[in-house]
Every structure is written in structure tokens, then in C-alpha cells.
Amino acid sequence: MRLTNYFLPTLRENPKEAQIPSHLFMLRAGLMKQSSAGIYSWLPLGLKVLKNIEEIVRLEMDRTGSQEMLMPTIQPAEIWRESGRYEDYGKEMLRIVDRHDRDMLYGPTNEEMITDLVRTTIRTYKDLPKNLYHQQWKFRDEVRPRFGVMRGKEFLMKDAYSFDLDREGAIRSYNQMFIAYLRIFKQMGLKAIPMKAETGPIGGDLSHEFLVLADTGESEVFYHKDILNFNVPNDEIDYSSDLQMIVDEWTSLYAATSEKADQSVHSELAESLMTARGIEVGHIFYFGTKYSKAMSASVADSNGNSRYLEMGSYGIGVSRLVGAIIEASHDEKGIIWPESVAPFKVGIINLRKDDSLCVKESDLLYSAIGDAGLSVLYDDRDESGGAKFANMDLIGLPWQVIIGPRGLKEGQVEVKNRATDQKQSVPLGAVLNVLLGR
Ligand code: 5CA
Image 1 (spheres, rainbow, N blue to C red):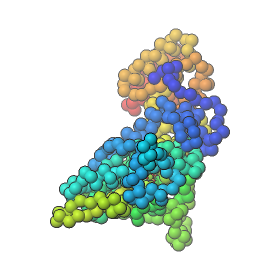
Image 2 (image 1 turned 30 degrees about the vertical axis):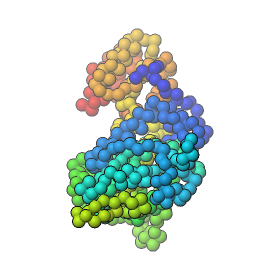
Image 3 (image 1 turned 90 degrees about the horizontal axis):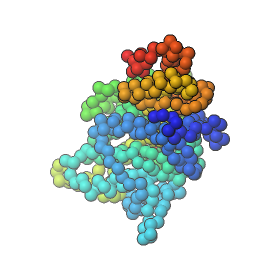
Image 4 (image 1 turned 90 degrees about the vertical axis):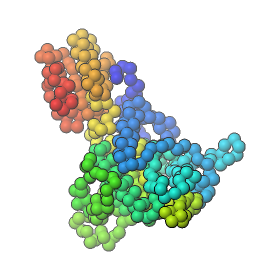
């Protein structure tokens, strides 16, 4: 992509409303634009990151055996009346009346809708277990939307729902999601700690939140310092095997959000207790038959007896993750994208638009890098070098290739790694090897 053709409305000044780095950089780097309080348009650069995050989530969810689908954003009120949550959910729910005076709502979550779907389609234990997920926009009319995508009104969530015949099966499903979450966040360069959590309006008695430590996080968290040394299962993980031992290890040390904090444990832990702030990027729930009972979702077991489905739900804040990744990875100049989610892998800076050799070599490198399968943003604008450097650092692409007349005299360009700030002079013919890590 040539920057002269790209829609990238960056800001020179710091927007007043941004109180934390991710909000500031998402606005300044032209990732998104506010439409109204807590509601944003995703601009081309921001959407690329969002899609990359979605894809990491998708691949890992698919590996667990969960299947992707897509449910609507607008839901009928009836199913929420059945579960009893229509009134309980309160003002956070955006209620809508259609032209036939039917009560509808913009979904804040999908337990009712999926339970309704499954009760009319799954009839016997032979169809179990099932785990279904989607990545769909949600709406919660938050009293205080703030920090940009961190607490939005409209936000993208991955929500998965598991259905099992018995509690044992449901715990197996829960464990699969627990491990998948550890792996998903790691692939985004994040260290997320599972913590005991309140179940709130979703319900149930077993629940973990996954928190990324950050000073700007909304939650106060407490944990045993050694939990940071636990290993995240690698690519060899077999989701059909017994995962209980791994979950037991991860839950063997104390970790809790402030709502679940236990003061007596705190005094016991003494020096080993860490207090910090965190961003909740995921939340998993086992709630058994809460919805299946209320909504009569049952199957016949092997003896022909009717049994209510055992359920869990598993959320990831996909749009919030864009902010969380920036909180975890930035400096004073801008964003530092981990390669796995970066909107482009490489940025090319041509320092001299008026120098025909610079233009020619920049054009050639742009084609060669693209042909090698690397996504590349080419700053071919007629701007000062300083402005281009600042812009490239702000948008945070992992690699920068800087082309100027002085280097070209020796057949060299500069390759800079955004994360390490390391710069090296590289012969034109070797640029691809450096970028491809060869
Ligand atoms: N039905 C369950 C799990 S599918 C559920 O709704 N869980 S939740 O309420 O915890 O939301 C799941 C995730 O969505 C949270 O962990 C958080 O990362 C994200 N999230 C929740 N509210 C917001 C919000 N207002 N803005 C951005 N992300 C949010």
C-alpha cells in the first residue's frame, strides 16, 4: 500500500479526551475515530489489527473443536423474559421496539439466543458435546464509557458456548477454553493471568477472568508472584486429552480480582503477594443448567431420560484487545506492534521524493517485499524525513526500511527494528533476507 493512496488520518496533537496511552495512540495513529460516546468507526489501519486478532482467536478456537457461526446483533425480548434476565439486566441493555411494537434488544451477550437455537436442534446425548462461537458486535449502554475501546458501548466480542450432558463433560469443555485462552493471549505477545472472578449477570459458580497487567487497567488484582513463571502449553497441546493437570497448576497459586480478594490469604502470602492493576481481556463461566432449566433445553441421555444441558460461556474482548496490546507494547513515540497482529509487517520510508534514484530503488523494494508475501506500507509522500520517521514510529510497524541518497551511493539502505530500535545498514540485495529473518 502506498501512503499517498491510503486513508490514514493521523493527528499531530494529542487529543484531549485520551487519558491512557492506548486511547491516545489509537486516535493519533488513525486506527479509529469516535462517532459518539463509546462508539467508534474502525479505520483501515485499525481494522487490519482487529482482523488479525480475530484470526488468532479463530484458529485457536477451531483447534479446540469449537465451531464458528454468526448470530444476529438484534434479539427478541421473549427469550430474555424466559431466562429472567430481561428485567435483571437493567439499563445496560439497549431496548428497541420494532414497527409491529415487538420488544427487541441489541444483544449484550448471547446465552439466551444460543440456548434457544440448541434446544430446538439438539435432541440426544449423541449430539454432545458441542461448542459454538461467534465474533460479533455487542452493545452495552455503559454508564461511563471510557479509555476508548477499553470500555466501549459497542464492542467486538468472541463468545463461545459449550453444551455437555453432565458436569464432568462441562468441566472438560471449560478446561479446553481455559488452555485456549492462555495460548491465544500469548500469541498476541500478552501475558494474561487467569484469576478467580465474580460471575455477575452471567451467573454460575466457577469462573475465571484473564487479566493483562497494566498500570492503566480498570481492575485491581492480587496474585502470587510465581504465577508469572508458569508455562503456557505449546503447539503440541492435544485438546482432546485430559487438561485438568495443566488447569490445576495454573490455579494452584493465588490470583484474584478485588471482588474475590481474600484478606486472610493476603497476610499469609506476605512477600509473595503482588498487587497490581489489570485489563480484563477474557472471562470464562461454568453455570451448569442455569439457562437450560429456565428455557427447557434438554436432551435424552443413553437411558432415554431427559436431562437439562450443562453449559458454559467464554468471552474474549476482541476490540478491547487492540487497546490492551498497545498498553503492553508502546513507548513515548507510539505503538510497537507485535508481529502477529501488526497491520503491516514493513514500512518503507523514501527520504527524497525529488531524487530519481531514491524513488526508483524505493519502488523496486516495495514490489520485492510485497512479492515475497510481506505486507508493506510505503511512505511515498512528499514530506520531510523527520515527519516520516515520527509517523512511522507512531503507527508502530515492526520493521522500517529507510531509503536515502547517502546510503544508496554505497548501495545500502537502513533497516530498523521498531521494538529494539536497532538500525543496520543493509545492501539492497539483502533487505529481504533481513526482513524474513534469514
Ligand atoms: N457471555 C459471557 C461470556 S461469552 C460474557 O458476556 N462475559 S463478559 O461480560 O465478561 O464479557 C466478555 C469480555 O468482553 C470481557 O472479558 C471483556 O474483555 C469484554 N468486554 C466486556 N464489556 C466490554 C466493554 N464495555 N467494552 C469492551 N470490551 C468489553
